Image (cartoon, rainbow, N blue to C red; front, side):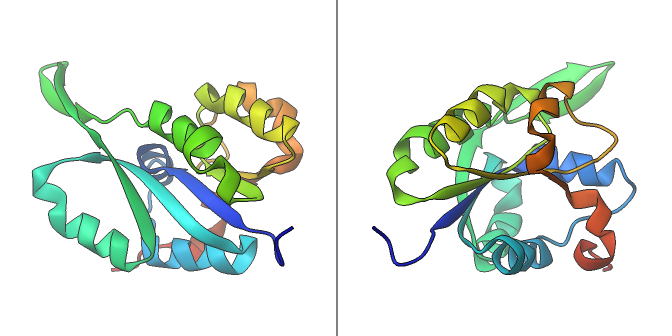
Length: 166
């Protein structure tokens, strides 16, 4: 038995970033890391992110802010004649939270509004390890999360604490 409850956060970086930006503001990742620690006692915060060579400075900043980065190669595609980049991190987030790191923590905080993680929430709940689900945008998240409404908190409602004002 552990002396205290160990809490890890598993963060879908693209879902978090795009969800907050759709609200018209930018997240301060350093403030968010502190928020996770102060509010939910998160010891380790795993940030699942697409890897692009031109973003090395961002990765350095995120690591210094206290995140453990898990990289996914990105793919480029064209949509309506515009180049877009996608780094789908869902499989890695599930693998790390449900298998690789499962025995290391007592409670998981999942940061995503994506319905693809419902199977993960079910698994964590069955094993008494689901803490909170932090949904980036209260207006735009999957209806599949409705059974977990009592576990949901909304990042966008904390703009005054978490906004990057630079």
